Every structure is written in structure tokens, then in C-alpha cells.
Image (cartoon, rainbow, N blue to C red; front, side, top):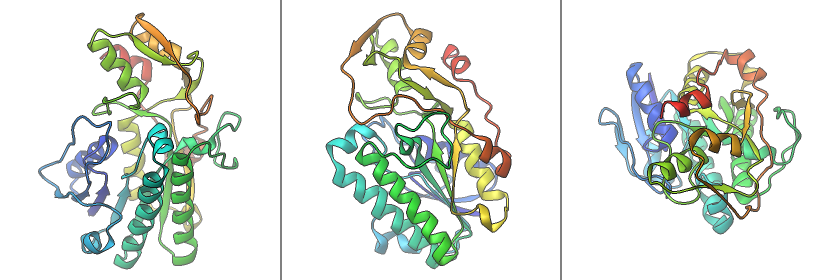
Length: 297
């Protein structure tokens, strides 16, 4: 099998690339190393690596020739930076996704697996299920959900088989650590290692569902390799364990040295995945427990 991974030198993408290569895939990676929260980029020397922008159709089009599966993870991937620079988020996450889909369509790719975000649920009541209406609170979620709509349209109009994943707060090995907008688990572990207080946003009672990167990788590989009826393509699937924790609970498992800082705009109060759909269609079963993982760090 030949697979192409956009964002394949980043956090989730590099973990996916490693696993695909272990399973015998020929892998092409596209990544422009633009993620500011990443202290390091992870290029696998067994993949074909290209430091290209996913929006550059002329440059990336030929890389899709002969590809079976496309895993689209490249994105402007944080809420607060997207609030500061909406144009970049929209360009990368909307135009970039359209470019990936068009290249895949023209090349006869079998499936495109798109990495989206649980931020599309906004203030919806939990547990979040795929039938809820979108409630986009910030430019990041608007841009990612726009990518979802493009995937669904490419399936319905052009017959390109797409699968859309809404990740719930992915953490784990190679997670971004730089700056104030990196994912919270990584920030807290970094702050502890530096001897600094954990910076808790607002009152810390906001709740999140956390997904280990290995479980996110497993979802991608299942979606690519399991053939399902046509009705299941162009649809959303939640990728989250279905258990949430308050930020205070997470902080308390890491360090008692804590301070509270100002709340942020544009963020949901609670997320919690209803994962019954992905379990039913693809047989996905999350393996890693957040608290147990943290205790081993």
C-alpha cells in the first residue's frame, strides 16, 4: 500500500507515519514545518519527505500519483493563534484541504481520512454526538468544519471516499510543548519539568475528553484498511474515549504548584465524545487511560 500523510512530521502525523511504515506501507510525507508549538519535527528517514505547503497545487499534485490512502493532518491547529490570525487559519485549513481533496480526486486515491476537531461542537450539550448542529466559536473551528463540508461534498459530488474524524484533545508522545497555546497536558508536564507553576486557565473547571495519540493513529489505520458500505463515507466520526476530566483534575495529577490565569475567549466549557458510531462502523476501541499515562511520565 502507498500512503500520503500531510502534516507527517508533526505530532499526530509522525506517529501515524511510523506505524504505517511498520505495517509495510510506502509513505510520502508533506509538511512545511509551520507549527509554532512544535519544538521539533519528526521526519522518518524511511518515508519520502517533502517540505512543501499543502496549498501549493502545482508543487504537490504529482506526489499523489499512485497513492492509495491520504491522511490529511496538516493544519493551523490551535484556537488562540487562529483568533489572532484568522486569514492564515482559513487559507491552510480550507484552501489547503480543498487542494488535498482535488489532488486525491484527480489521482484516483481510494480514501482520504481528514483530521478535524471537536471544537466544532462549541456549546452543544454533552455527550457530543455527530448529529448535533455545528457551533463554531472561533476562526479555527470554522475553518476545520469548512474542511469537513468539503470532504462530504467531494464524496457526494465526485465519489471520492472520505472519512472525517473529530479528535478530542489528543495528547501523548511528541506532543507540542512550546509556548502558551500548546495542548494543556504538554504544557503542564513542561512546566513541572522546569519547576514552574502550572498555569490553569480561568477557574479550571472546564472539562475535556482526552485521546492518546496511539488511539488516534489506530482510528486512522482502521478507517483506511476496513472497507465499509458507501453510506458511511463523507461522514463524521468522533475520536475520543468518552470520559472527560476537569483541567483542575489534570493539574492535580501532575503538580500542586499551580496558579490561575485569565480565561480565554472562543473556547467551549465542556467536551465529551459519544464514540458509539466509530466503534460500531470501524470497531475502534481506545486503549490508553489519561491519568495512568500521566502517572508514568
